[in-house]
Image 1 (cartoon, helix red, strand yellow):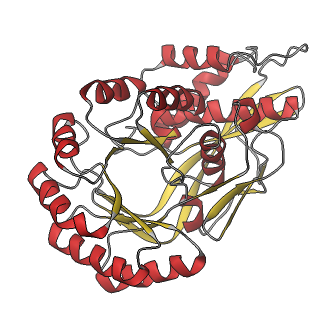
Image 2 (tube, helix red, strand yellow; image 1 turned 180 degrees about the vertical axis):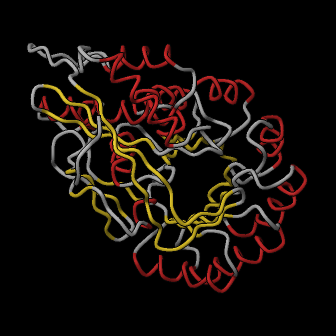
Length: 366
């Protein structure tokens, strides 16, 4: 970011990576995917004895990447950015865009690692580098597409654990979706905020039917009800429903955001670091969204605590809708980092350590 500088030259010495499997405690089903594990790529950037840690969590359906393409991008970046000033985060982001127009999660991994590195050098938390403050944010907890009984059981559990916001995945069958949401609302009462994510699963007509039936459930929003490319359907839904419409897969870049905003197509956006290419680009989109009175929720892909911590530092640096959707780390069997992030009673807390405050377990490959 502009404004970051050091009297000492902290040039990049090496960018390395490590591919790992994130194993879920139970399979997650959404409208366009069903998975029980995900590959993620951890990133390391070193300079003068300091090391910054980042993460790239690719998703073929959303970002068009896999761990192979992420690895290739990082290998190229290692050659391209050796000797570059680690404090020139904005300049390195511009250079990454010249290397590739896509590869958003790979870029995010490098961008996150730079904030972690610079924070450690400057003895500041990443949130402070971004001009933010605070250390906590309420997060939602997700219920996948599953039968009614299991959905109610999970809703009951999450309420007992202290979560105040529950996200319900829908998009395969509108009638079943309505039944599940009705039962969940009856179970948790009006004190819990319910939000719904269709992951592009509905047609325009199905989404209209769902919204008309869901009026009684006091939903916080309906996220990405239709195909990512159908901006006009989003606009129709926003204009005809009292339930706010949120863009997720439709908003993968600042160009996408500006088009959605110009069309007045949505009331809210799900801002994911992996989709947009990092914290730096996330901040830019968030500022523009706030200036246009469009609500911002910081969300996540299938990321470890590294990506979630990065999302938290971004979230605490912007004015958002009052909670984040940063819960992926809570569903993983294996953990590759310690410190830096803790979740208690539905609230994520970042630590006091510098940068992202994380401690990575294991070695990186050149």
